[in-house]
Amino acid sequence: MEITASKRLQSIGAYAFAEVDKEVEKLKSLGITPIDFGVGDPTVPTPEIVRRATQKGIINRKSSGYPSYTGASEFRQSIAQWTHKRFGVQMDPATEISSTIGSKEGVFNFAEGIINPGDYVIIPTPGYPPYTRGTLFAEGIPYYVPLLAENKFLIDLKSIPEEVCRKAKILWINYPNSPSGAVASLSYLKEVVEFGQRHNIIIASDEAYSEIYFNEPPHSILEITKEGVIVFNSFSKRSAMTCYRVGWVAGDKRIVDIFKKVKTNIDSGTATFIQDGAIVALSDETHVEKMRAEYRIKRDLLVDAFLRIKLPDCTPEATIYLWQKVPEGMTSVEFAQKLLSPEIAIVTTPGAWISDKTETGLNPGEGYVRFALVPSLKNTREAARRIKKILPKVL
Image 1 (cartoon, rainbow, N blue to C red):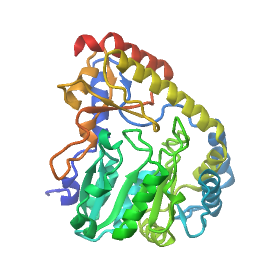
Image 2: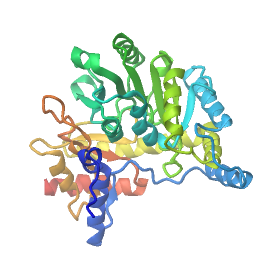
Image 3: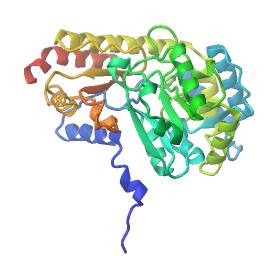
Image 4: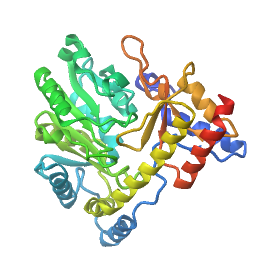
């Protein structure tokens, strides 16, 4: 019997972060424990108040049955309250909010409700792989726009051809941005909204890093409008809840309705006891402030280390990432391989792996490596020492 994967699955290749995991396993097989900055999975414990609330929820909901497809009413109410407190925006929890099983599920499946075969989706590159994978599974066509340092890693809306705009149904944006750490101003978000309204394109705003920032709190596109907009957010980075798989979407009722219809046909919702933990997480800012402070220290340690060896200052404004320029004359993969030398044993993600080529053949991730600031403070200090003392000897 011949078993063949679908053409859709064959078309997407390997998942970049699965490739990073393979590099980690190679070092471990040699008896080397690497310092792993490869995948953005926080290693700090989920806050105790969240763990306790989740445990209590398991007991209280011992006979609760299936969860709501789109989130318990109290969960959606907590999202609405937090959004109003954080961004000054009123949301209707009944019609403008839905839970998700983390952002990835929502991002990937969203295109299924909007895209018809042949429709375009405008996607930033580098960017989160599910923007593309979801588009391809919905039989849409990705159109990549590069995020470049000369544009402060903002999408150059004027560079998008009119022909693409006529065929496009969704524009993905991601600010604070992974991997660059760039933040979008309110005026820029207004330009994005106007672009979407002018071309009848839905703006899908991935705001998973909205709470990991080092200067002023970033804005949400919801501060401009809800019309024609849907926001994706998550507890994974804000509250170190990657294992819990819980997040939400919020925005235009019409778009959220479509999302809900897709979702109810794909999954059975996030466990209600996990939503109980998420409600408590959202009510507490102390643990978020503590994590921001620790990420800042890690960021500064690595930035200083690279400055000491005469590499460019790539200090991010936000997120848990450092998007570091590599030495002149080296590719991102070559530099990542140097960092993987047994005496250094630092795992990163080559920028070329998380970037797609544009129509002109440009890979905007080439020339960068991404550090996810997730190892412990102790290990980050050790990594900084190796970068300063050992890396120059192998370059």
